[in-house]
Every structure is written in structure tokens, then in C-alpha cells.
Image (tube, rainbow, N blue to C red; front, side, top):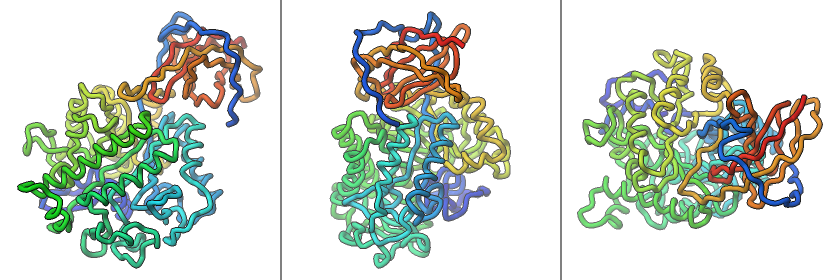
Length: 537
């Protein structure tokens, strides 16, 4: 998602604005053009354990898609949300609720929200100033409410996982929208004012910004602490990074970390190996520390889509683009093989047949990489590219990519970004929703996370059908309570999933029929389904 043009002679037409591209991940353009230089119901009385059937309802098999479906909600430079900085609280909240409504309409089950775009925070933090993309100011003053708590609560009401999206090392955004590398323009409580020795400005010129030096142990610990503060304080479902670690190279300019390299590198360790080790240490420590705090919280990263090219390394992919391992020191292959992440979301923002990084060639590499590990593979889908000339003028491009995902055992997709889902250019989103997201889906279970499989629930009775047509159901959840529920309805020889919800919201049936209910824990482990309940017309 970034523009650059050294030696690879490829022309890419991008319809995203330069500012927006400079603020987010890179995906397509870097590979193509870069060459290195509700109220809670009262608990019912226990009547004893219920005997359910694993995977069957009224004698027929239940059927539920098991895949993560989500979108990135980007806050930096107000790309997605809030629509402008400094809006009133009520408007910010309503805009967010509108995005959640869109997620529900798309049958998504997760949302990835940018809560630390560049050394700032969308929550009251002792480590970072309030984000100017929320408050409209760089004075560090509170907006008077807690956006993080609101966002998580509202997502959970709709049974959407909330993945808190952090950029670890970015300290600022470039001018004129951000402070650039000008310390005088930082918020008074910005940590890089207090610790200027941690700051590196890169690149030179108008695109300069400040970074936390990844090679300084104290800076790395501070960055980790600032993100873990949110994990400790809030009921997040996941911690999420994108592709930004060391900055993408700008021409022949080197990132100015000679001092920390000289001080902290091992004897004989190359700068490239040292930088990779720094990023690996961040990823490994974050995984360990998240699990120590809250073992059920997932940790995932959405890296650039190429680790290394096969012409450089026989272990690499059939591609010819920028290599994240070599250029931004992100050794994504090691993260997966070591199990330091629970899920990986490579940004495959390339069309099927693209000569430098064809979707159908890079995808199998990632599928093979995760095979035999506990790491789940989701794909970052490039909805922002739809409508460009060439293959992206085909409204079925992402639809075809999702079909390929099914062939390679991909367990989910995250779409960049929310505003592209809403825009539905060329009817692309409508097409793939109809073919791939027509019904609700359950989150894939993660066996490496705690298993708290709930007791089999009991459907006690159905209430009167209100004008909405949704029939309220009375449920006894059993002794071991679920985090969420899944409702199945018998339709011929199977019982497909028809609704899901958080356990704090009682289920409702979409009309007459025979239904069964199951409970799920936060890791996606599902109970046996309940005995059936038939609702008469």
C-alpha cells in the first residue's frame, strides 16, 4: 500500500491517495515497484446436565462455516474512522456503531481497530498521548470518555471479536497532517520528548517521521508495556500488528541506528541480522507476555506478503518483489515456525496472474508454511484496489481469490479497509458476500489457547413471535457457561447455522422450525448441541 520506484520497471495504477497509502501497510505497490537499493439475563436454575449430540440436531448433521471474517478499521489520518478529528463524542460513537452494523451486514465475526497508529492511544494511557485523529489536538488532553471501552463493549454486544491493532515503533506521522520529525510539534506527554535518545528520524525530507529505535532494549520494553497496558485494562480478543516494523527503505537512505547497533549488537553480528533479531525479540516477548497476562487473548500479525523470493532463497515463494526478511527485517517464516503468533494475515494485495507476485502463486507458499503448526492462516484482501485498471477492473477478482483461499485451507480473511467494504466498488463486495459470506460463521478454534468447552445448553421454550419475526428463546446454559452461542435450524437433511450471539444476549429464532443451540468458549471450542426445540407457526 505504498509507492516506490527503484529498479523494478513496473507501473502500478493506484487509486488510493498518497497520504492514505503513506499511513498504512504496503502490500501491492512495494512488491511491484521496489527493488533494494444489552442487559444481562438472570441465570436460570440448574435442572441437571443435558445430554446433547455432538454435531447433530434432531438426527441431522449441523453445518457451520468455520472462518474468521473481518475488516480493518483504520484511524490514522482518519482514513476510515472517525471521519474527521475533533468530532463530538456522540458523533464518533455513532460512526463506530455504523461500522459495526456494516460488519454485521457482511456476516463478519471480527473487527480490527487501529488503536495505536503512531505512538498515541485511543484509550487513557500512562504511556502515550491521546490520538490526535480522535481529539483533533496534540495537547494530550482527554476527550472525556473512554473510546476503547465503548468500542469493545459494542463489538461484543454484536458477537464480533475485537482485535486491537497497534503499530509498535512508529512515533509520529509525516507533516503536514502529523508532526513529522519536529519535536516541538509533539504532544507535551509524548514519550519521545522525554526520551529523545530513543528517537530516530526517517527518511529525510518532507516524509520524515519519528520512530522508536527497535535496537534499544529500554525503548522496546516501553513499547511493549504501552501495548500490554491495553491488554491488561480491556477485554480485547486479540492483539494485532500490521507490516510496519523497521521502515520500508527510501532510496539509498539508511535508518540511523548506528549508535544502538554499535552498543548492542553481538560481536560479528551483521546489522541486518541484528535488526531481524530485534524484531524477533519484540514478537516473541509480546507473545509470551500476552499469554502471561491473559492466556486466551490471540496474537496475530499481518505482514507484507513476501518473506523471500525463491530466486534468493529456495525456501521462498515464487515471486519477484520486495523481501520483508531482507528489507524491513521481518522474519515472518520464523514467527510461524516458532509458534510466536496465533494467526498470520499476509497482505496479498496482488491480482491473480500478476507477474511479480501472483496471488495464486504466493498463496500456496503461505498455506504450506502454516501446515503442521498451530498458526491459523488468514489472508489480507486488497479491496482498496478494486476499480483500478487491468485485472482489478474485474468485479470478481476478490471473489475468485476467496475461492482460491478455500482450496488452500485458509481459515479466514481480513479486508482492507472498512470504507472499501462500504463503497462496494463495481459491486465487488456484494458479489463475494453472496458467494462466500451468505451465512454467519463461527471463529475457528485455536487448540493452543485455553479450552473451556461449555456445558450442553438446553432450549427451554420459545416466546411469542413479535412483529420483527424473531422468536425469543429461553435458554438454560448449563453449569459451564459459554462466551457465545450458535443457533442451528433443521432444513432438510442438515441443520445449518442461522444465528450467533454473545451469551449476554439471549438468542432469538428467525421464525418457525426445529432448532438446536450450542455454546462456545472464547477460543471457539463448541459444546454438543442441545436437544431440539420445535417452534410451530
